Length: 360
Image: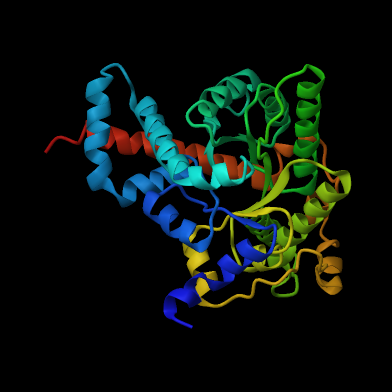
């Protein structure tokens, strides 16, 4: 086997032999091109990703920022920054169009995230989702899985927007979103609106659930068996996928926020999406992590039993572990939203530094 064949084997095998779809957790054009060679049929963009992409290619984006400022003399830093997010998303969506057309719209999607500053305003989230949806035919819009966001997702989906839940870490959140999307699809059918493949997906940020439980157990001085907490996100993803299959939900679970290869290897075989950052894709391929059908394999009993002794994991794992009113206050939700907001502010600052550099 050549080096090139070794690099593409595990991810390509999963894409070729199972219903599991690979998406790239970045809209960076060069990374996405390589990920598509690995078998990727989707990608995502958000303020964090846009900030990283711009910082990694300032030679390209600095003159573009200045050009946008010249074209729109009344725009502030935020408007220019979000125009960059749009441009990155449109370019990435074009790269994915062949997969979109080949799959009839189920794959080939580019996720663009709504402005995190709108997280408390349902109507604003819906309006921005409708606007973003019109950027390209294969756009899918990310809305936070809070009580406000779930209501916004249902309304936006009813209006014809393809949906991807974000700020989502628990089975309860995923099931609430899945049910909301079912209601939207049923409402569209009842009102005689056109049927189409929306490609709706429901993210669980498994690695960020792991992160939160490690923080929570540390704060509460709880010692766990080494390695057990690395299975928490995997357990939630497997449980959510099982529930979606049992209930016949027409959306798919999406695994994101990678912290270990289990968040890929333990999910292969399911009708779901795995969305690793590009470097994780390279590491999975370079290490030859097998692409075996493991979605139906339960989390080892001793590990799951220990996880279930943790009240915070119990909230994340059970279908009714928390109410929608509690979604926004879950520790992982609060910490991640703060990171999204901080990235948005940093993108504003980057634009400011280009337009108004400090005086010498």
